[in-house]
Length: 90
Image (cartoon, rainbow, N blue to C red; front, side):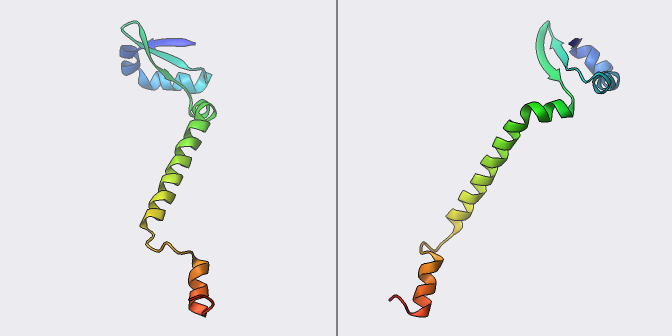
C-alpha cells in the first residue's frame, strides 16, 4: 500500500487520484507520522461499506414510517370505519 503525507496530497491531489484510479490500491494518508485517512476507489467503498449504507437507509425509512404514524389522527382501523359506515357496528 502506498503512503502519502497530507502536504504531498494537497500539492499533488490530481496526480494521486489518477494513481488511485489506475492501480485501484488504497492510499494511506499520514499527518505528523500518524495515519489520518485512507483513500479508496468508489468501487472499493461500495463493496466494503454497502452494509453501512443499507443500515442507514433502513433507519431513515423506519424513521419516516414512524413520523407518518405519529401524524395519523385516527386510531381506529379502516376495517372498523367501513363496518360503521355500512351499519354493521354501532
